[in-house]
Length: 205
Image (cartoon, rainbow, N blue to C red; front, side, top):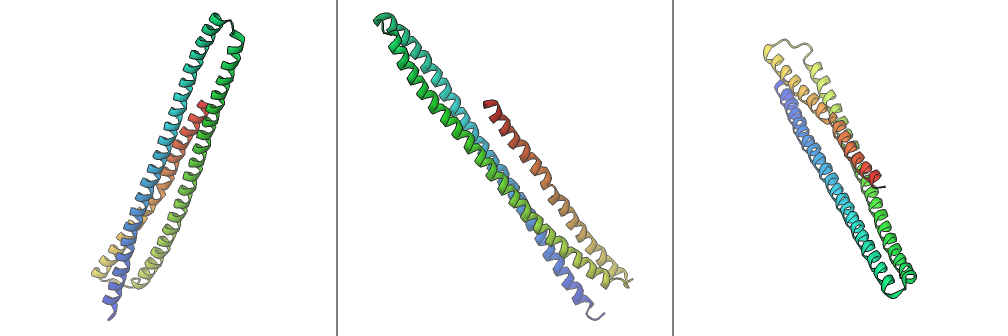
């Protein structure tokens, strides 16, 4: 028992270090969630801006088509060159339509690329957090087994209080585990938002 205070101090230091690690991991998890949310929001804003630009181009195309039709009808009526002017107008409209179709295809390709990149980043972040959580759980189990061994024959009230304090630290670690498991909820929300983007693309098609 002569080394008992030193042992307890060592255990307290280890627990304090584990507690600091828990706080650090909490901060990392919160930062990752904020980052993923900001990246997804930025991607959605880009998609919405590109979609709005496409719609504006489509309206502009329709306006040009109406203006071209009016010009064609007027010139054909005045100059008797209706057939030639209609062919020229059709060629111009086709060029504009082709250009717009290429831009729409580019928007869809960029949206798909950003979605794939976000999914990959999110998956890597989850794997990293899973590894950190596993390491933390292993450390917790080692500390708990060591504590149970050291206190298996202890009946002193003060020492039992210390054991209860250690159990409280263990419960804190368990609470963090539940917080970490909340990543599934974040993943689900990201999936819903990505699905909304896919639905928007489907409506555009």
